[in-house]
Length: 136
Image (cartoon, rainbow, N blue to C red):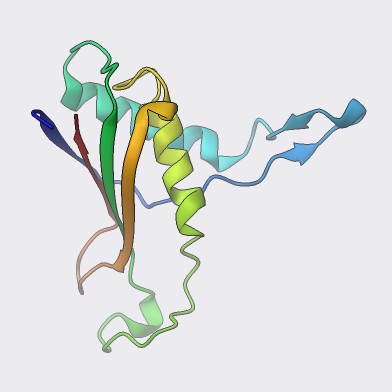
């Protein structure tokens, strides 16, 4: 892969929720679900970093680091796993990011042929964030 870019986005990671079933078996997410604002914030950050370059139409590799905030009760203590914070399932965390990337930096998330994700807790005094490394 010849090209690579890294995006650092200062938001708390949020997993893609399951869709709900509505009348007639149609699936939906309520308009007030926080995932909508989260994806919009991620898209804005991607657009700012991408600076108007065209959409990548080639197969891509995506590596994502999800940094979660430390819980206040253990802010200065060493971490013990499993921690009790709500981190979300890795696949749902990735899906929300892939959705935000679609139409912003890539044509479609079906282009993602290689991926990996990692969840960590912020260092004491550190902030939650997402780091996305995309190569193609």
